[in-house]
Length: 312
Image (cartoon, rainbow, N blue to C red; front, side, top):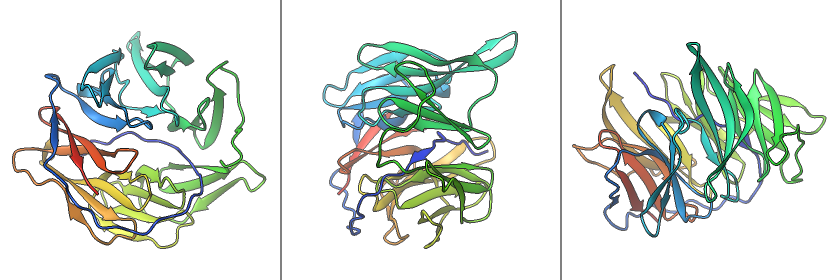
C-alpha cells in the first residue's frame, strides 16, 4: 500500500538559482508537545504558524510556532487532504467532503485562519478537481480534465491572472506534465520520465520540477524536461525556499501499512544526499521547509507527534 499526499498545481515565477550548499544538522529535532494526533504540517509563508490536520485528514489546525498553542479552524472531514496557504499566508484553500444519500460531495472553501471565516467558493457537488492552488492572494484555480478554471475568492466570479510575473501554470494528468501559458502559446507537454505522475512540485525559483512515478522513483529536471535526474526511491518531495535542495522521505511498507520511513535532503542536481532522521522506533513523514530554509517540520506516523529540526 502507498499513501499519497496533497496534489497541487503550480504557478511559475522566475528567480535566480543559488549554488548548492552543504546541509548541516544543528541540533536534535525539537518535539512539539500537543497531546493530540497531528500530521502533514505546512509552514505558513510568514513562518509564524504551521498548518496541521489530524488523523484521516479530518479538520484543520493552526500551530503558533512561538507559543506552541494549537487552534482548530475547521472540523470538516477530509479538509486536510487538499490544503494550501495563500502566498501572503492570510488565507487557506481546502476541499471538504460530506455524504448526501450515500454519495460523496465536495466543496471548495477558503478559510481566514485569524477570523475563522469560511467562504464556500464552489458549493458541494460530485467529483473533485484534478489539482488546485492559488494564482495570487485573491485568485484560486482548479484543473478538471486539463481545463483550468480561475475564480476570484472575493466575489466568486470567474477571474483572469493579474500578476504580470505569472506566465504559466504547471499541471499534470496521468503520465503527462503540461505547462499552460496565459498567452497565445497555449499548452505544451513537458518531457518527463515514463509512468504516472504523483506529487509534482515546481521549485520556488520556477526553473525545476520534482515528481514521483507511481510504483517507481523520484525524478527531477529542468522545467523544459532537460537535465532529467533519477533520485531513486522517494516520496513526498518538498523544495527548499531557494530551490537548491529537496526534502523527501524513503519509506517501506508490508503491503498494508508503513513499517519504516526516514527523511532525506538532496541537492537539486541529485548530488549530496543526506539522511536527517534515523530512528528505529519512529516513522517520519511529510517534511516541509520553513520559509527561511533553516528548519524542517515533519510528523511521525504512529503517534502523530510534530517535530522541528534545524538544518543549514
